[in-house]
Every structure is written in structure tokens, then in C-alpha cells.
Length: 435
Ligand SMILES: Cc1cc2nc3c(=O)[nH]c(=O)nc-3n(C[C@H](O)[C@H](O)[C@H](O)COP(=O)(O)O)c2cc1C
Image 1: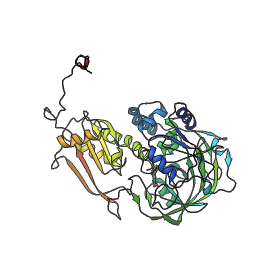
Image 2: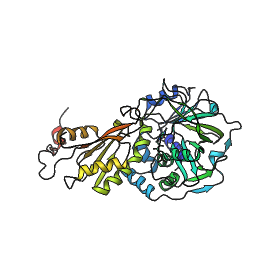
Image 3: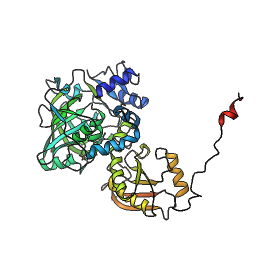
Image 4: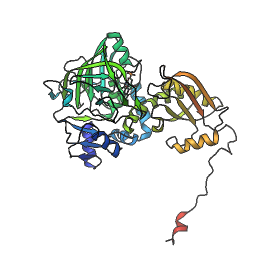
């Protein structure tokens, strides 16, 4: 499967909406995507650009799993397998993403969206940044980027990211920003693995990947990508970045961030720009889902882990629900610590038993209501490093209070904690002559 064959399949089954009316990249596309979320959409006629725009492609685990022909239950195993068994991709010399090269690279030609009213500018939100370091090799990750001239953008780089390490080491880094990627590339770039791992090898383990050398920078990019923006990010050249609505659905603040300068833009003949609505379901899925296998692995090292859900209600980043097979009194507390080890930005962890549906928020609340006592089932880690995205974390340090909630029932006689069953009846026999 490629993204293009996937789009064809969606079209054939009438699962993608094609909007032909002229529409603006400023506010209008974002507004329609949000209004019709989670419906996949292609905007055929963008007022300010000759490129089409696609969005809402992978808003749910179901749509992500459908691409790979697997069930949602198989996503964590697929990601875990691919992280552990990453493999070399095939290098090609001819690639769709380089069918055309823009003569005079100009960001104004691209449908870079303005999303929300108070955003500081038009933003790239779905760009996979591929860069390279002489010691560590290639890295792929995401950085929202605000356009402020025809050739420049300011790039949000959270401290401590591998990209940040590369930039601080080298002072400037060449980058290829890839837009319009299949979900293996999208998910792999969102994983956080050890430095020195090329995430495109994880993508290749999920589904075979062809790459091509970028035209002006020394990195390999996915051959099937729709649009590639090549250039350089400079540590010492900074520009105001923000405000921007990010994952939490709140406005992130203005910061001075490094500048990216474009050198070349290559693309398919009929390239489609990939939109990713900030703070909406697709963004949430890409942030949270790749953290589920890392939590699963850490928890499973100390107790038997059954499943992990990083849920949209917790911004798909700040909350994790972990289902365990509790064998001893200490298991939930061990699982809480391990879950925080598996996802450093997590703030609240909820540990539940196997009879709780971790995808149903009411069931989590029910477990809290009936199995939890604050004086003994709470684990608090004060002044822990928190997420830069959490508006409630300490302003300057982003320190936070991490809390683990043990929502499991006690071991032994659980009679008073078990869900009561209603009688099983033969409904048909009672309804046969009803009107
Ligand atoms: C859609 C999306 C947008 C993101 N935006 C940013 C961003 O603007 N800045 C940033 O530093 N990290 C951002 N991230 C997070 C990193 O890309 C992500 O955590 C990545 O896995 C870190 O890679 P690393 O392990 O190579 O450091 C984003 C992630 C996703 C999925």
C-alpha cells in the first residue's frame, strides 16, 4: 500500500469527500476539517495555491489500522515489532517526490494553512523533519513551523529532542521537511527511541519503504512523499514563533525559536499538501499512539501488562490508562512508576484491572468511583519534569506533579468490587408479539 493507493481505495468506497469549491488556506480549510472531523477530505481548489490539500486521513486507530490491514488491537504489537526489528530501506534514484523542482523556491506557492484566529502565522504542522548528524546518522521527527517570509520559517524545537541535540552540536543542520506521508512514516517519525536510530528504518519495518537522496541536502527522504522542502535550520538565527494552538487545544506562547531557510522545493506533478489540524484527533493519534508501546514495554518488565490507552480526553499525551493482570499488592505501584518511565511527558497514570474497558472513559471513572481511595491508592511525584505543552505546569521550569491512580480492586475476595451481571434472557421470546 502507498498513500496514493490508500487515497484511491478511500475514493472507491466513497470514504473521502472531495471539495471542489474554491477555498482559502487561511482559516477556511481548517474550519471545514474541524467541522467534518473525522471525515477524510481533499480540497481540490485552493484559492492561493495550485496544490490540493488533504486532511483528516488518520483520525482514529480504526483508520490507521485499516491502512495496514490489521485490527486496532494489533497496533501496539506492530509498533513494538517495528521498533525492535527496524530494517534498512531501499534506496532508489528516481522518485515521485522529485518529479518537479520549483525553479525559485517560494513558500507562498504552498498551501501552508492558517489554522486559528490568534495563531502567529501560517503553519506547517504535518512536516516530517529529516536531518543528519556525522556521529548519529539520520533522525526523523516533527516541528511545527511558522512561515514569516517567502523563504523563511521559525521552527519550534522542544529542548532535549534529538533534533535539538543535533542543532546544538552542529550550530546549523540541513533538513528535508517531508509533507504527504504514509502512516508508516508518520508514526515512525513520532516515536521516541534512542539517539542514533533512524526512524525511517522503523517505518520500513512497518511497511517496506523506498527512499531517495534529497537534491540539496545530505539526507534520504521517502520516495513517495508528496512535497519536500529542503533547507537549513540555524541555531543562532532566531525569530518569534507563536502563538499557536497545539495539542492541548490551548494557545501555546510566543518564543524565540531557530530559523529555517529554504533552499529547494521538490514535489510530485500533482502533489497534495498534507494538513494536520493542531489539537484535533489526527494530531492526537500521532502524538499518543507511538507512546503506547513504550509504556507497554516498561510496564511489562515489572508486571504483566495487558493493554495501554493514551486517550484523547487526556490530550493523547498527559494521561495513560494501563491495564494489568494484578498478582500482588505492589503491582499497581510498580506499574505506575514504569508507565512514567515509558512516557516522560505523562502527568496522570490510571491503573485498571482486566474487566475495565480502557477505551471507555465512563468505565475508568466507574473504577475510580468504586475501587479507589485517595489516602492509599494515590502515588504523587512532586516537581517532576512535565510537558512543555501543559498550560498548568510551572510556567518557567515546566515542572509538574505526576500522579498515579491505582484503580484496581484488592486481591482475594473481590465480591464487592466485581461488576454485577444481569440475568441472561431470551429476548426474542418476550418480544415476539410486541408492537
Ligand atoms: C504531529 C506532531 C507534531 C509535533 N510537533 C513538535 C514540535 O513542534 N516541536 C517539537 O520539538 N516536537 C514536536 N513533536 C514531537 C516530536 O516530533 C516527537 O516527540 C519525536 O518523536 C521526538 O523525536 P526524537 O525522539 O527523535 O527526539 C511533534 C510530534 C507530532 C506527532
